[in-house]
Structures are given as structure tokens and as C-alpha cells.
Length: 323
Image 1 (cartoon, one colour):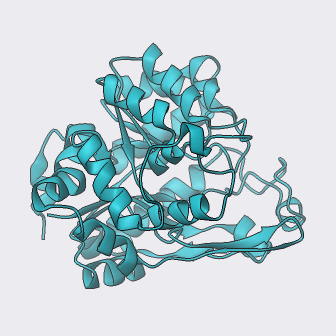
Image 2 (tube, rainbow, N blue to C red; image 1 turned 180 degrees about the horizontal axis):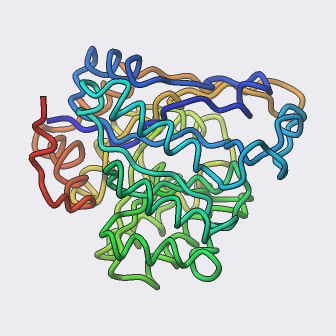
């Protein structure tokens, strides 16, 4: 069974209003394309911008309070879960939904909403993308520690967007500090820790941490083009980044029990404004799967199924065989 551990559903109004791509994905489209490329199951969560942000502000490229909702992601989580369980239950059976959260803003209200949703609709993990919403992931150590307590109580893992360089919101090293402080809670750092060698080694050392390789090809392209959203050469995992398949094989060989394969659909591509111009980083679901298929069979099964199941610790794995 091939499980894609990293996919977004819904609409991102910030991307849409600012002319970025992609900005939307619905459940039928994701599953139709994924099945065409040999995927069996999908971990899914909502898009990132949420309706607590002012719409005019978003159109002006700014995230500020004043939107039509008051609790971050309350609408987006419920909308996605209803799409999975009510609108398309036949397709929803193929998914493992995660709820998304803001680690800093309105934590008590978010936790109450998540509890109510969990009682109504099963979800299997908690997702954070702190960079885009400018919300410090270190809040999980203080004002947002209630989210960690909730994860502990419900035995749910976190999947957290990780960054390096000048991003102050979701540094991979900060996520690792949260994981170190909470050894009984499981964490997965997205995007291969941006190939930061020290962070990957620390993930390998900690028993409660994993990493995923989502948006793998465009991160490899970022290395080749010298962008600063990946680790600098002196701190980078050693591999031939001109060949994304070879990089994935090397990561799987180096971290056979820690790497999770994921595509990041629809964000396996990104096209948007940068420094007055346009940044175009483009891949396809087919190309992401081609990298996976280049991995030797035993390792391929580990990174596309077994390691994810270790992260999830599903109480009943029969949910994966639902038709």
C-alpha cells in the first residue's frame, strides 16, 4: 500500500487573491490524480490561510485580524471533514484526515473546537504551517502548550512545516526543541528539514520524531538554483541534487525508519511573486511518484507505509483497508 503523507484540501484565499498558484484542491481531484499515479491512501489537511484573517488585508498581501471567523481553522477543519465524511464518503474512506491549527492565536477556543470536532468526525493527527500565518511554533512550549496536551491525551501526532534560514516562525531546530521537551508526543517535520544535516541527524536520534520529504523536487531545485529556503551547502545533507530521485534514495538509505514519503499536493509546485518578479518552481504528482519508485522496494515500502504507521500508531489499522 502506498500512502501519501502530505496533502492539502480546500481553498487558500491568500494565494488566490494574490495571484499565486496553486490555490485550491478538492477531494475528488486529488484522489483521481493520485490513483492514476498508483497512490492508495492520503493523509490530508486544510489549506493554510484561514477566515480569521481580513480579506482586504489578504488581497494586499498582509495577514491581519478582522476576518469573518473568530477561531482559527474552525471553519476550515469542519469544512474539510464534512467533505470527507458527508459529501464524498466513498472517497473519504481513502483518507486519513489531520486537523490544522494555529499554535499561537486563540489556543483555548481552538482546543475546544478541536475537541468537539474529534467527537463528531475522526481525525488522526494535528497539522501546523506556522510560517505562512506568521505564528511562532515555539508557542507550543508556552501559550500553545494545550495543543501538545491535547495530542498527548488523544494520542495524536503532529505534522509540522519546517524551515531554515531567515524564517523566524517554524525553524526545524525549534520544532526539535518542542519534541525534546515532550518525549511522549510524536512529531514529524515536513520538507526533509530543508536538507539540514544536523536536524536530520537529530530526528534520527530522537525516538519521537520523523520527517517527510514533501515537495521534494522543488526543494531539490531550490538547492540547484541557490535559494535560501534550503540549508546552505556547508550544512546540507550530502547528495546529488541535480537528480531528485538519487537524493530520495540517499535519504531513504540514511534514514530508513524515519523518512515518510509525501507529495505536498497541490504544492508540489509553487508559482508566485518574489522580489518584484515571479518565482516558478514546478513539479507534478507523476514526477514526485517517479522519485518514490526509484527507491529500492524494501525501502520504498518503509517510507510509503511502515514509517507513517509508526508515526500514527493507529488503534485500528483496518481503517486502511476500507473500500
